[in-house]
Image 1 (tube, rainbow, N blue to C red):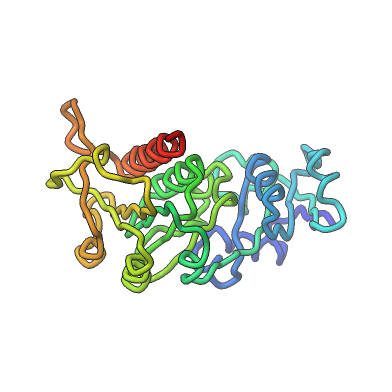
Image 2 (cartoon, one colour):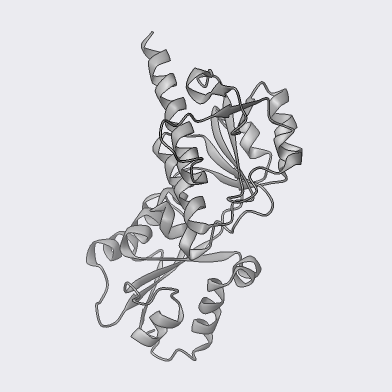
Length: 264
């Protein structure tokens, strides 16, 4: 049944998903745009409802792939605007069920290369970190307390669909990191005072990179769990890198070392 009024009861429930409190209460989140919706469907995420613009119509190929097991609801432009955090809604939004993995799953699965995020606050930074982790085939991303909500619409857009490609787990880092070390994983963080470069550190063995808040860095308690601190050397005059850029450099260096190791 089509919905044209933004005052409709279902629309009000959907709009609550723009807020973290609403997402946590319903255990659902919104994704917007044909690319993200296609990625969610392709990854077999639990897509519950697809809301599409009555003016633009259903995307034919996506509809044919999902008809019969995903609900489709045509809506007016006013409804789209109420359920979107962008100025120009893209004409298609999906309601997706959260898939929350238990914290200990990160240790049970293949955990060769993991990014640990401690208090990153910018949605764009978190989204880029997830996208970079996906790009190198990392085993997962571990989010500590105080990190921005991974289901924030801005975070989701920044992942460009990588949100659906690898496990993302929230946990108490002070519980998980000691267990990871006991399992033989090296815990690596960055420091401008470090004496070892990331390029001269063996990252071919099971490694978790710990990255921290944009302004404060990794918290003292979490940093104390690290086995080693490395520096990303820079030849220019920049003092440091953005946390997402630093994560990308570390991940691709680990990927490079692993590729070189497999050729031996």
